[in-house]
Amino acid sequence: MSLTEKPQYEEEWLNGVRYHVVRRQDIFDSIRWAAENDEGGNIMNVNIHAMNLAYEDPSFRNILNHADMVFVDGAGVKLGCKMARLSVGQRLTPADWLEEMFEMCSREQWPIFLLGDIDEMGERFEKAMAERYPDCPFAGRHHGFFDREGEENDKVIEMINNSGAKVILVGMSMPIQEKWIWDNRDKLKPPVRLATGAFHRIFTGDIDRAPKWVTDNGFEWLYRLMMQPHTWKRYILGNPLFMLRVAWHHILGFRFKERT
View 1 (cartoon, rainbow, N blue to C red):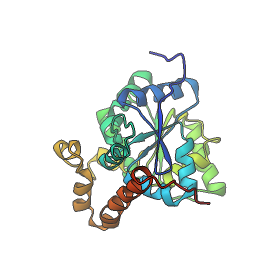
View 2: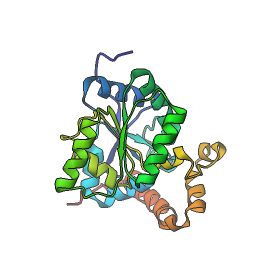
View 3: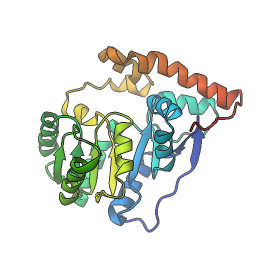
């Protein structure tokens, strides 16, 4: 069903970062609006890693604070919001809802483009999409190892624009993917731009996701740490740092000061 007005959602601010209080259906409504109206489709998410990056990086924080939708992804941020007595909405990890979006794209015939990773992974994703969502148009793919400025970047954007894609999945690391979307937002024709990280590797089975009982109880970060020990700083240091900042600004009341 088409929407007559652009969806609007409640906003909250945590550690200097604005996010939207949304539920699962709200994401699909925003995607539909963008696809049908060719506007309003810069959709991003925040987990603890994103919040810590944004705290230290004003340019990344500015992107999040001006995106069309920023949803909470991660039990840690949800806990931080509750500590700060802020509304949260629903925790919405992309891996929990992107396949439902593929079903929507199949019904509406909205072509999808994957940007990121190496060619081999893009090929595996394309094959998996053809097997599991044969009615979903696949507009194309391109690896993520290109010069994101200048002539090479312009050629990648031209390829994406000529593909006819309605939805682009940008699967790079954070905040590279968000910065690329934002820097090229006026050049990209696909109206729906999603920062999806390593979702394509989960989709193809190259990365195992934690069992549902683990994700539902807020311990997906621990499972990821066990599977990828090299990320220990992100979790062992990053999680307590985020909580300390929440306590400092929202419980003790010390004002967040913009960094320049």
